[in-house]
Length: 61
Image 1: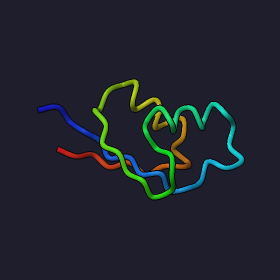
Image 2: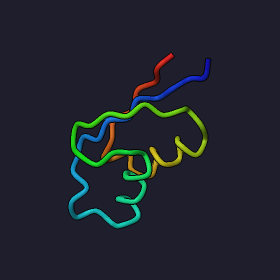
Image 3: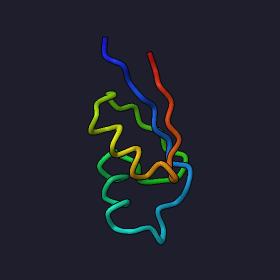
């Protein structure tokens, strides 16, 4: 079974650059306190790193 990560949006995307908004929408995060589970891939990690100041990440085994 592949490793998953749980990503939660903890800060609003209001006033953020459009590139950050696109990354959040691409991960499926549209509202504050919404959580999604994504596969742990290098591309997903890069997306999380770009908006790390807006999200909280946990690894799920």
